Image (cartoon, rainbow, N blue to C red; front, side):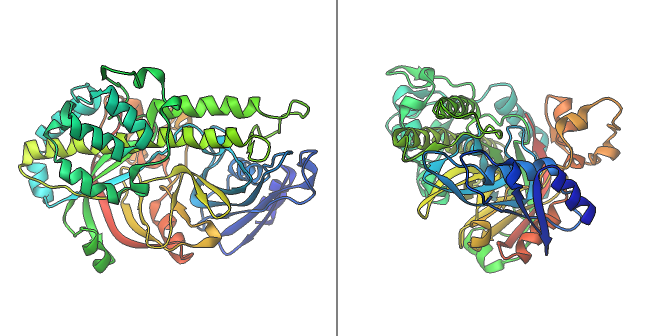
Length: 481
């Protein structure tokens, strides 16, 4: 430990360790000229035996040290046990509370990436008996474009503006696409089981122009798609119920089939995230050099209209993300009914883990971390070879009322795919794994061996009183784009 701390100090970090929590701050020698002498300290909860990654710690310390010379500061910063380096300069698992400013780069472009969970009264034996037929239909929808998510211009505009409620109201006026066969009364009931009701304060001015025409039909090739990277749709079985009373209230029982969706705002998020990465850089005071971290905040006192516009643009992408997950789930639910008969497959919950939310006197931005408010349902997946968990939040203020969003990567995609790496199923942990994908490299990049073990991530958060376990699901098969 002492050798590790000395090595980190040589990289400009002051680090201490106590009871699974690392406290990190930048040395005063690496501060920017406009900052005061004190550095904000960030905390990371890491299970024993987990790697301490200097790159991720430096990214978190940089995030904690962001401020704006014209007003705005970071109040607190922390990270969850799935903490690991991020490609955009912000570590995955980071949570930052700000006052007087927002940091678009702290969220990036995967806006409202999140999880959605449904359950169905269908046994594993019943499912496996017709698995092949079901998989072929889903491959058509998810990979070959047999899905139909066509909507009217009015519906598309309502979706970007108001999220699920806007989309649903417009669809009730004129249903189009595959969902003409859906149960719209069920949609209405399930909106209460989506974080923020699946609706944030968006505005169509921030949407890609081709997706919000004044009239006609919108055929969006990105909507109802899983996406790359670690996004997936997974078929699971409820393996164990820990909190029987709460699980019963949520409609979850042992032996049920479960359907978990992990996706976000797709190309819309990339479009809006990229736009605001550039706008926040352009808004930086011209008389000052760029911050070394390349994290450009927007100051509420200096540019209130930019702060308002960014939050509105983020909400616009978030609304799209909510509807994208809904459609991914509904395409699956429609195929379930086609293959297995009259199956309800109700929603348990849908929540984001890449989002900025107004909390207290400012904002909390979560990058690869779930809101874990008191009594908040949470969904934390493992890898496609490990269990996933349904949990309930405990509103732990030390960790900014947040929790992990997964197990966290142990090895990068580059490392998994480079020449010389043993790519046998045994080495990758893929033996017995049912992964449905058209790209062999996706199966390798997202193999169980690429991820940290999920159990210590869950146990550390339970011990820290961040969450409690409600149920555990084990994977049956996984769709990867």
